[in-house]
Image (cartoon, rainbow, N blue to C red; front, side, top):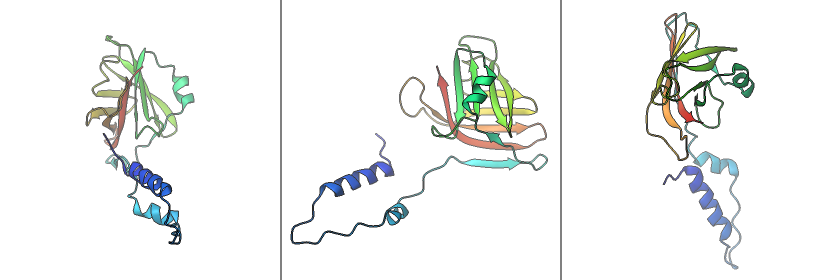
Length: 180
């Protein structure tokens, strides 16, 4: 069972709200919420290793919108996506058929342009890591840990390494989620 700092803080606030001061003691003044926020550690963010090499310009993979994904009309019965976490839009979405030798097809947003990428092996070829290639770009997805959470498609921690044709490399850390 996982117990986060946010859960602990909520439990402490709940218990404090239930307790009543004794009749002969004055009620304690509530602390400022900013002070309470300062006591909590900052939220953990995935590590993002900046672009190295190439012509010096950064590799920028932007979040894909629902409109981007719908417009791509990716073929396949099952899909995978890579995002920093569940609360952020994916930066890679791919679809493929199970038990197929046809490549999985995907999209990324490079700068402001949506680019198509492909990976061999259909859906099955993506579930344990994959290598996507596109116009002047290669994306290597590597799983870095066991699935977290439950359900049919729990996310797995992963890194996405973007290699640009000019030799630039950038590594993104996040979650890889595959399923229906």
